[in-house]
Length: 198
Ligand SMILES: [Zn+2]
Image (cartoon, rainbow, N blue to C red; front, side, top):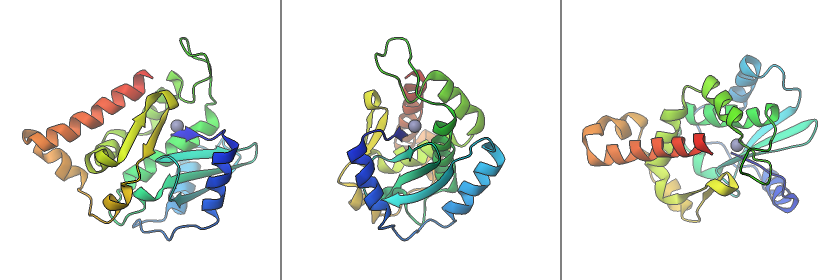
């Protein structure tokens, strides 16, 4: 979600990468990255790595002219993380290598997610809604969306959520008649609208 240009933050993430976390997701994030790259990003020439780290925002990418590293927060390194969530994040972060920050009317500084970024994401990521439904439906209390910083922070309480099993997208959306299901769905959609309008 974020592009790291803060050197100190980038260094800390780099250090975290040197102590990689054992992967608990039920699929290979490296194969998924390779597959998505081959299908959707043949134009990207960077060497790209991906890893889970216990710090930083929900997801981010750090890159120079030849190398890139995608960092995904450990909160999502779970046996029950849907593949759609990692698929969306990989597509999103790789898009940052293609669509660079740009000036948008009303903003003094360049924004990481100009409107064309969201258009491009929508065009290649049909899993957006279900992925965000799962994320917000399960971790609403442990995340903080910071629209101005274009970032979703993971709150220190995430470790509690990490030890509890997450609910599946179907369970979260099934009860559209139930108040809880409605709340989750609304949260996911609100978030998407907010992002799209940024
Ligand atoms: Zn982003």
